[in-house]
Amino acid sequence: MRRQTVTLKDVARAANVSPSTASEALSGGGRMTAATRESVVRAAQVLNYRPNAVARGLRTGQLKSIAVHHVHSGDRFASDYFRDFVTGVLDGTQADDYDLTLLNSNPQVPRNRVPRVDGVIIADPIADDLRAHELLNSGLPVVAGENLPPGMPACPVVAADHGSALREILDHALARGVRRPALLGPDANSGWGEVLRAEFTAWCAAHGLRGATRRSRFGNPSVPEHEAQVDELLTAEPGTDLLIVSSEPIALGALAALRTHGRSPGTDVLLACCAESRVLSATSPAITGVDMRPRELGRECARLLIRMLGAADVGDGGDAPPAGPVTLPTTIHWRASTGPRDT
Image (cartoon, rainbow, N blue to C red; front, side, top):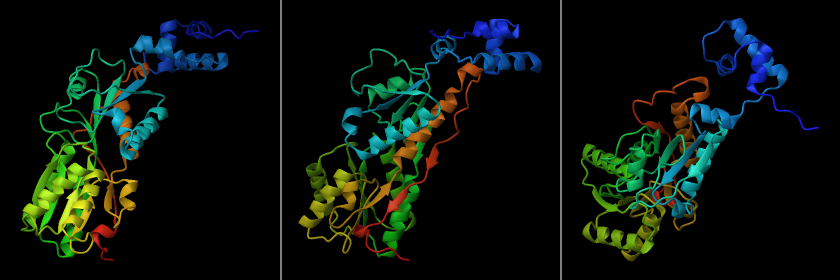
């Protein structure tokens, strides 16, 4: 025989209370005596009552679903970083039984509707991403997975500690005698790029060094274009003895340009990347990279967003957003391109 579904009304009848009182008792809300609440909970246990998630969602208006937006979601799935980031978000959503949606991304075309989700994580927010701006102004709770660029609407941020990693690389290079550092990083569209430039400039000023900076379009995968950029930098700044770049394509372009200029990475010039990928460990020489722990970053974004949303079925308005960015530690993988480390 087909088992009859136990409803909230059945629980209320067994506990001799109204359905609304039963609902409040099971959600932890409402005003009632401890004995009444205990009676309802006991009746639910005896009857093996299971709340209807769809009905609860209609009642509370909560979908138990969040979304991830990235300026180029489809293309970025080719990167280890974005796949690990989304995996981390899934870690966080599954822990609280939330569904995850990957939003369509077209940075120059407006959305035709507000996504049917409770909140959104914007991965790597970019200033000229029209859809990111729409989401930030939509009224939906939003968490940014990385620093916001200047001029973008504010929201809570979870970001890797880029500053500490960059300073550690610069300190190591200084100990090896570097005097002409250079940074090639994302343009002002990227909050990450702005953080790197500010830290680099401040460090150079503190140590009385003249550092050179160049900007690259965020997400540009072209190795030849970056090789040309590094070639221009080395031509203009032939004394460069440390080159810090922000991505794998720039690092690969830098290797080629340095060889064209007769430079030997790891000996007469040091080379480091502010990101990490498996490719960097396979080059010759292997390139020092900064692991931003994207899976942990994605997980913490999901946890923060879900805490902000709160559990609507227990009448909780959610946690207040943090006052400032949540910063997560990074790991530097030291390799031959920066020479041996002092022990």
